[in-house]
Amino acid sequence: MKNPYEVLGINKNASEAEIKKAYKELVKKYHPDKYIDNPLKELAEEKLKEINEAYNFLMNNKNSYSDKDLLHSIRIDIQNGNLGEAERKLNMINRKTAEWYFLMGMVNKSRGWYDAAYSNLETACNMEPGNREYNRAFNSLFRQNDHYREPYRKESDHNICNICATLYCLDCLCECMGGDFISCI
Image (cartoon, rainbow, N blue to C red; front, side, top):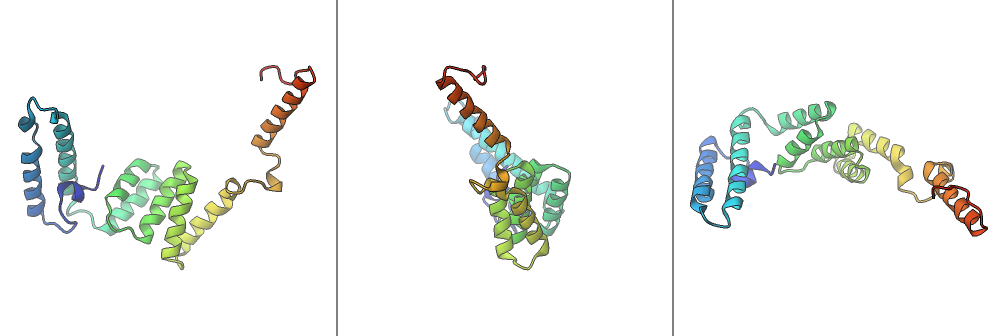
């Protein structure tokens, strides 16, 4: 879901009346009945769906969420493995703070997207260098996954990729000599 404030064309501090007014204007503008027998009808329907989602979200959450509450609910989503919901909520936040980068980094780490996680956690640490939680998560990720960033390390000589490459080379050499080390290759 896109940022609901952007979809409705309003600022984050808009009142309930301003939200309703913007919603009504956009519904009039994009209502599919205005696009009967028009090639833009499907686009208008899609846009109206987006407008309705944004409006419903803001009306359901306008009074119940401050940024602090939203960030707390994102932490809970990450702990519960609701990564899609956590990312959706993060994408609704306009102001990207160190905590935003930290939480997005944790979502990416949980998904196994280590480069994105590394980048986000590094940004969080740079924005708040004294934050132990951010530094601990960044250092943990760095220690856990530093091997994939370095092309060659002596302690990684026995990993599965090197074993497969060695077997493939052996098979090629045997075939050059008229033999066959691995028959399925």
